[in-house]
Image (cartoon, rainbow, N blue to C red; front, side, top):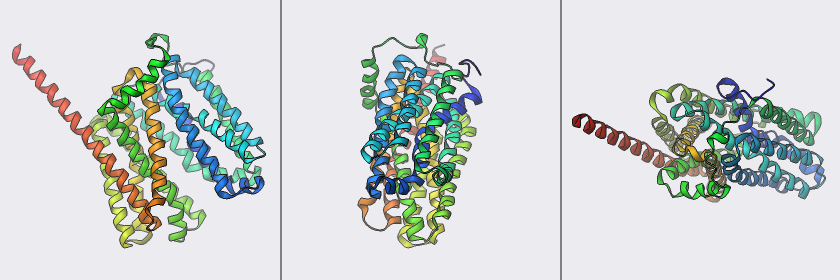
Length: 414
């Protein structure tokens, strides 16, 4: 592949999956190195964990910036700039000799990682429509899901062999590979002939249009709150499995991986069914299963019913459905705003990480027990996601009904 020719099919799915994996890899690769990092820099564990927080801030902010820029100037230039920024920031992280230097570099690294998911979703909208876009998004998420499945295991081996700085050398190498791939094998899907020529400010103004539209808000809330439930699980799972149920740290990795497998299976099913049933219906199904599973989880955590299995089984279904909900909400949102796909994708990413971070913080505020705290927040998030999903399904049914009535009147008039 010596020229930018890939604009669809399996090649596009693999490339976009890699670009979307910037965030998960930067987090999950990094976790095994936190204790060694804290020891070498002479800081507390809590201080070392700030490097995760600043990365999330950079990731969320970057998505809001890159979306309109990719709508105005094209997808490939924005991707190239962000990957270069990520690569340089990773090298600075590897060389950091103090916590402030590391925090600054991690914030820039998050800023660089922000373009991958935003621009990938926008490229899918440039290339596909409706249920087909949801199908491709599901495949992209399948590729991306390999990162959180393998990254903690691989990261642990890198730390053991190269130390915590080796993590950032590997991430810099990953960025270099992605940069070459974007430059040689990814076609521009938003060329001059597709852009409306509006000034950059107008593309940023699209955020206001999206936020004032009830339908787009329903998509954002449905998907964002589903990810809130996921973040509540991620922030609590290690304490629940290890501290409450006595699972070993090594065995915890398998429990965590099982839920990633659930996410992969749900997206595989979605990719096969969405063309037949449409993303509105599958979105409603996914949000319903997440809500019902979260309720079962809460009941089991309150009563102790089923022990560890009473926690693990409902989590498998609740977490697994989050990817399905995410793929279909993004497809619906981008379908409604084809001319502002970058801005719509960025706003979804901001809601995803913003509501996710809020849900993770809420877990510690409940103050009952680790399992109950997690389940309460998951139920609240899933209930809001479920409500938004039902509203979207009802709205889609009304639109089909009006279309049918219009067609019938036209037929009678003829």
